[in-house]
Image: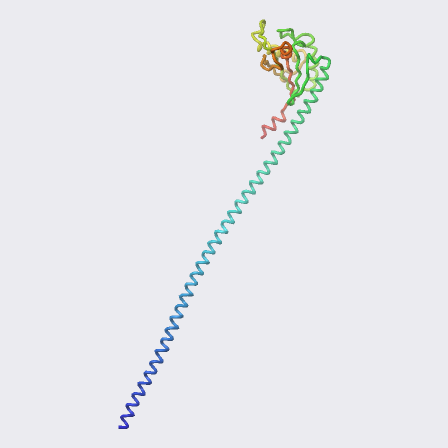
Length: 269
């Protein structure tokens, strides 16, 4: 009986031990499982953080590359603008130099014209102001000779007093070979009735008569001379009065220093 009790007691003790061992094992298992789940979650969180960091890094690299590309583009644009600025600055310097040279030529022309005017005025000072005038305008010298000094009315034949005036004019012209000469005939508005077809023909004939005297009698180089007629269409005063018509009947000898240097400069541009 006692033995039976002992057996039963032993079985109970073994069962309790096994049960306790089972409870301890389940607890450790659960703890291990919980730790594993926590570790797995941490691992997932870490992986997610790593992916987020990688994505941010990629975004930063992309932004950095874009910024670098923009900086390169801005640098290239700046370099192009600097090159254009330097080119424009060079062009401006060249233009300023050409303008300076042009102004120097124009000033020289004015100076030559002024000297020529003084020489002409001195050479022709023996004639009255109602016979001829010497003026300067736009870089040119105008020697305006009235009909009364040069021609009989309605004629293109130069009289003796006119030839005397032309001889003094020719002396100055021959001493200044770099002067271009334009002889312009002018009339009043009264129609011509004899010898010439009209006032155009008379104005041109008077201009060519003067050219012949200057070139044949006084050896002025004909290459320098242009003969032209303006008829009644460039009057000094109104043709409604006798005094106005008398002033309009004139021959203008227009003298202009040669502009070869000026033309060369303009063509070089």
